[in-house]
Image 1 (cartoon, rainbow, N blue to C red):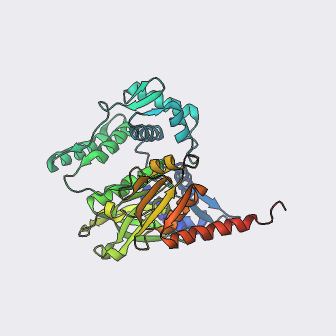
Image 2: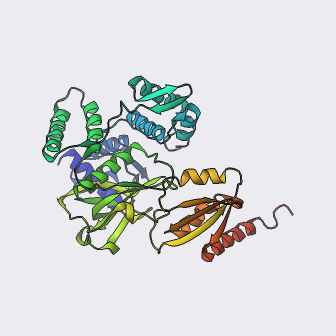
Image 3: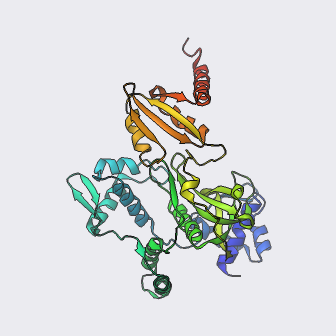
Length: 399
C-alpha cells in the first residue's frame, strides 16, 4: 500500500471512530507494523494534523492539516494576504494600518518584525510601492487574470505538470503553478468565492490549500468525497457536488456550498459545509452537471451571515453619531449591494433586505446604544429582549 493511501486510511479510521484506535489497533487494521504507524502520525503532525491521545493510547483527530507538501510556502501566502489588503484601499495603507490589521490574526500570531520583513520583500520585488509612510500596489508588476482558449489552457497546464516533476526547484515551481492555475479563465461563467459583507479573509495556509482544491473542483464540476465532522461527533464520508466558496468574516471561516451528489438539481438539497470541519478531501472521479440557473452570488445576495433558513426581511436601522458607529458601518457594508445608507438629521439610516435576522441582530448589538431598530417590530422586540437579559445579569451588582 502506498504511503499516501495508508495515511488516508489512518486518518479516516481515527476520524470516523474517535477514541477507539491505538497505534496497535491501527497497525493491525491497516496491515503494517506499529513503527510505520508512528512515523505516519509524526509526518501528518508535521503537515498540520493535530492528534490527542488518552491514557490508554487511543487517538482523536483534533484538526486536519495538509497531507501533501505545501504548494505555496507560508511567507508567500502572507505576502499575498498583505497585497490583497493594500489593494483594497485606493490610497494604499500605512505601515501602522498593516501592522494593526495582521496582528489581529491570533491563530498565526504574526509578529511585527515578520510583517515588516514581508512588506520589505514586496517592495524589493516591485510588487508594492512605498511613498512616505504609505504602501500601494504596483499594478504594472501584478499578474492579471489570464484569458486562454481551450487548447492554450490545456497546453499550459500540461507544461506546468511536466515542470513540477523535472524542475531543479520543484517547490518554487509548485508555488508559481498554483498561482497561475488560480488565474486561468475557462471561458465560461466561473463559480465565485463570495465574501459575505465585511473584511477580507485571513485564513491559515492549510485552509488556503483546501479552499484552492474545493474551488478547483467547483470550476471543473468534479464530485468530491469529503470526510466531514461536526464538533466532536464521529466523522462521516460524504459525496458532494461543490458549487463554490463563501467567506463569513464575523466567524473568520470559509464554507463550501455543495449539493448532495445524486440530487444536484434540487435547490432544497443545497448545503453549506464549514471548510475547517473537512478532515479529508479527494476527487470522486466523476463530474456533475451545473444546477440550472444557480448563481453563488445571487444565492447569498440577501444573506447577512452564512445560515440561510428564513425568508428575506426588510430592515431599517438608525445609526447615531456615537463614537465611530457610522464610519464602521460604512466600511463594513461598502460592498453590500442591497444596502442603502441615507443621511438624515437624526443620523445615518440603514435600509436593507436581510436573510438571517438572528445574525443581523447579533451584529447590531456590537454597536451598543449607537443603533436603534426602526423596523421590523419583530427585530426591535428581539433586540429589546436581549438588552433586558443583559441588564438582568447586572441587577444588584454593587448594591
